[in-house]
Amino acid sequence: MADEVPNLAESKLTALVVDDNYVNQSMHHKLLDRLGIENDVVCNGQEAVDVHCSGRNYDLILMDMDMPVMNGIQATKRLREMGIESKIAGVTTRAKEEEMQEFMEAGLNDFQEKPLTISKLLSILHKLDFYVHT
Image 1 (cartoon, rainbow, N blue to C red):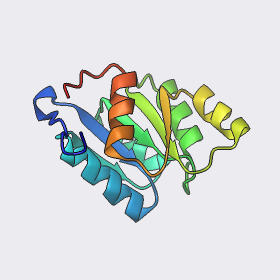
Image 2: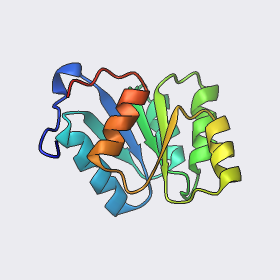
Image 3: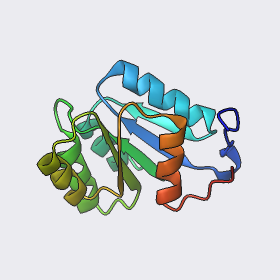
Image 4: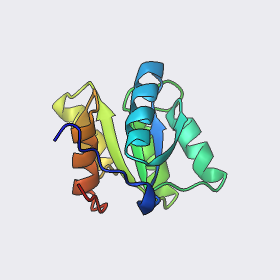
């Protein structure tokens, strides 16, 4: 099963990675690439809001919680206030119950703990009703 990575290029899915950590950015970008999902990377929540203000839209946003300038909770709330309907999955290492509740209430569709793996990413895609043919 580990070798059976679906290629979703034909689905034309797009994703935005929002994370201030270069290692996480690179890892998430490569996972999405491996699945054939076109993706962009930004360093904080404000950049995620700005890229949407410039007219870009994504099917999926992988949102870190702890970032400078604007954190994931603030960014998720702001994107939802702007009417952004992208599926937003929170991706973080910090999982205190009250913080996770606040993050979910901000408008998340799903949550996965870091580090993301192909199976965790596929789980997000399945849960969020993206058609994934494995």
